[in-house]
Length: 285
Image (tube, rainbow, N blue to C red):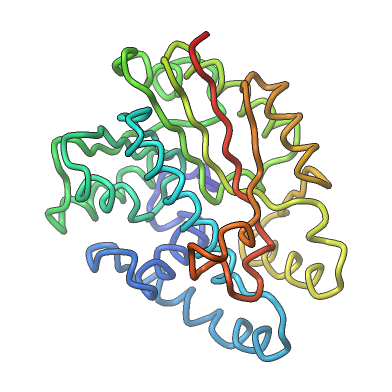
């Protein structure tokens, strides 16, 4: 989602890198293996090992933490019966859609949404691996579109308004400035308002990430890797929660990985706490 070009070979390096991370940690399927992912993953092996040896953060540590928390909260929403429809925006090469469809079968409808190039690439990977199911589809949308066929509003118009919905954005928020992000949140809240229950899950990095020297270095390195600025919008969980409510969500909570350390091994490692996970919802009055 970070790249607006519709050619797969020009997809953001972060999409390929995260795809390789999921594979490396046995969270994905071999069908999602790409040569680009292998190249980017190997390119970062040395700097990540160096950071680890200096007791600094690594990209893998917070990637795995955020991924596992989002999974846990989505499992809870599905198992409670509140959510049966999921739209993952900027899904990239995430294996979540495949994993959840495999586990829940016809109990859920999972839609992976991304810009045209990435959507076409993901569709190809799924088809090649024979991984597509009737309850799993890939569509092209732009999270910044207010209306039209490439908008979230258009996509949700075809869904069942009698059942709950979840929207997920992983690895998306910090690539946009604050005004764009709050506008995106308002767009999401408006689109999912007609459903009896609507959940929004996302990761976000706070402004406090740039306070420590090691973290500043890490943010600079990440910005160079993604070929653009990494935006740190809010200085506290409370500020982000207020912004989410202003955007139209009824409730909003930012989770710290350390709060899940007892339940999730990925949340116990050094660097996991560099990220927060957003859980916001809307509910019928």
